[in-house]
Image (tube, rainbow, N blue to C red; front, side, top):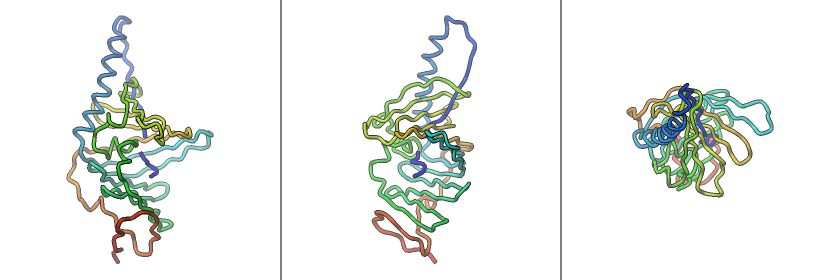
Length: 224
């Protein structure tokens, strides 16, 4: 999932204070950032919104930009749709993840299993038990946001670090650095918490004529 999803958020807030208060302010920000993330995860059981994504390669080649919309319902149900520059749809139904390349009319499906909990996508789509899979720590303030760094507990994780930017317990950005030196930046331009959800958004039926590749337990019959 070009998501894999799943990625870090910037945050920053600069306040001029007396030198004697700097240390105390730092401690307060640390507790607040992690606390905001925990509150977001515990209280936001579902959401929908829009996003912008930038992928920057270690080689320094031109960044890849994309945008689209998303929705999720914990645990394991999500819809992540790229609209620009190329349409692509990712749907998690709680058991399987479907990726549809519209231009090729090709569908890839694989089991979600327990892997979701140890990926950046767990911040949005997981069960909410972050401490089981991540070591959380304060990452300071930047760009008007409070930042949290989440490092995977599993040594063989596919990503190196994840930074999450929040404002008042609202998720704003994610920054993901993978093991190949590639960085993915995601900005949540709109996020509505706990809206009424149509369960059909988290089901996927391969389009007629689509080439289906992967581990589908039972591929639904295409609707004509």
